[in-house]
Image 1: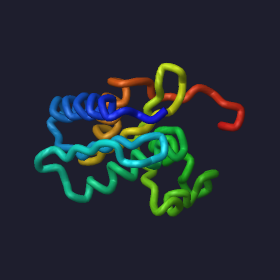
Image 2: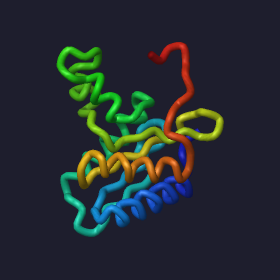
Image 3: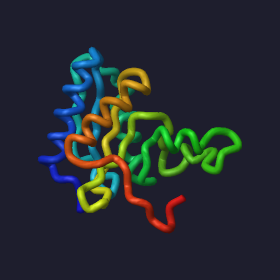
Length: 144
């Protein structure tokens, strides 16, 4: 099941509200479970460079079913995923991308946010994801 446009818009609204509360301007992208852009919002004065980063954070998260910050920890020099950011036409491996998981534990999409510190990016993405679902996939035997 893919995230619906209604869910994507609700996630963006919650993320935007969190960005406003933090006093920052963000680019917010929601992708479906195939990594295709479902909805996008660029707040006034958000950096142009954050457009691409927000979309790539969402894609990275949905491609691997985890938060981009977790992938970043695994992709440090000497780590098991070192160099992964060069795959899939470029991934983003720092915080701000979060899976969107429905009530049945199925990943329906992901949200990616860029425009501030990675801590703020993560907080804004988390607000968006939690507005429409969970952020963690249930354990599966093929996931480590």
